[in-house]
Length: 181
Image (cartoon, rainbow, N blue to C red; front, side, top):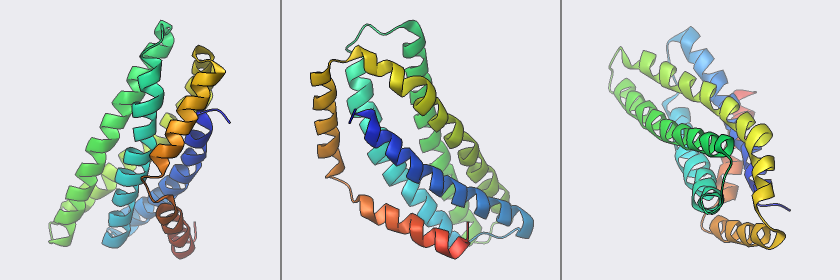
């Protein structure tokens, strides 16, 4: 397996959570109410699984190793844009958590911020993931030897050991059952 294999597998779980977030956000737009517990779960998933685990491996392993290579201008530009997406996701997720906190304390305007920030994430992730999967990951593998790919894959496995993947897989599966999406 190439070092991008686990990243692409993780994309599938992130896509599932984003579909749930989209479903709940559309529901909130109709009802003008949110499920604060779901927002807490979504924020936790994005902060921990999508950002610390997934983006962490991209940034701390793949992108770090790519920076050691003489990248084509197109690949360097794409990597910089993907990093900007990661920063945007972190900021937007923090704003979503803040808006949810204001919502539960009774701020009547907070529902709009919750809906808008969740919508921002729903728009970001599918395009971001598609770009990585279809335009970036495969082409940049050509910069690496088989030994370098194997070393990155091993480092990725070690990185994973620091996280509890099952918690988030179980979270998404449980939420899918309750939401019916």
